[in-house]
Length: 262
Figure 1 (cartoon, rainbow, N blue to C red):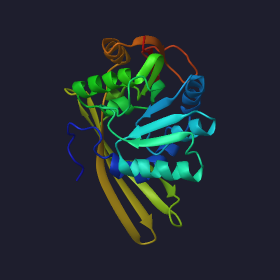
Figure 2: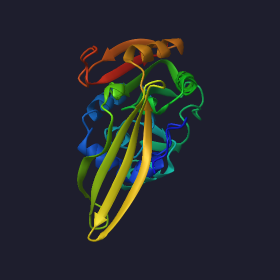
Figure 3: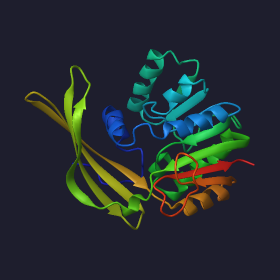
Figure 4: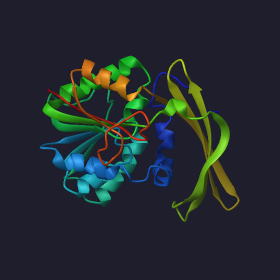
């Protein structure tokens, strides 16, 4: 059975690692990568990526010459990213660190830019976890540095449903396996949590294996999140509603916050 939502947003991500790229290739894809690549290329110094996962964003940035450090708490996610960095011979561009974004293990003002792509901050399920992360970013970001964050838009509006097949298809793995994702979506309105109970079934011939886990996200509105940034000492420089730089409004399907450390 999938676990009930707890107080730690990192729960489930180790189990998700083998399926992360397969699912994202069919949903998010790479449509956000040019935005982060542009931000990385504009950075006057080292870039930090929070929640770098399997390297979906870090690898394209490294390939165009961005010097980047990726941090993630999940060992299985980082193992996949490390193999990719090694195969691409990008060790001189991309460094990977296992750690907690609430307590970043870097000296003050190490980075010129910090990025948190697609929903990373929404894995922080308690107000004190978000506050600790924003304080940690403020500490490691140099003066005048940029902090860029994308949020998964309006998760609380997603319809609740139970055991619905949301994706199916082939995944390359030792000759190929057929994967089916059965998903349940639950809302905890009091705690502003959206819980995804994931059930991935892999089939090869007559053999099959099912893995079950839950991923939980906490959503604040763009305005609420911007106020948290300001409280942590950042200046908001832009609220964007798409990856091409259009201004954010309440109907936007993309939520991006750009901030600066004064």
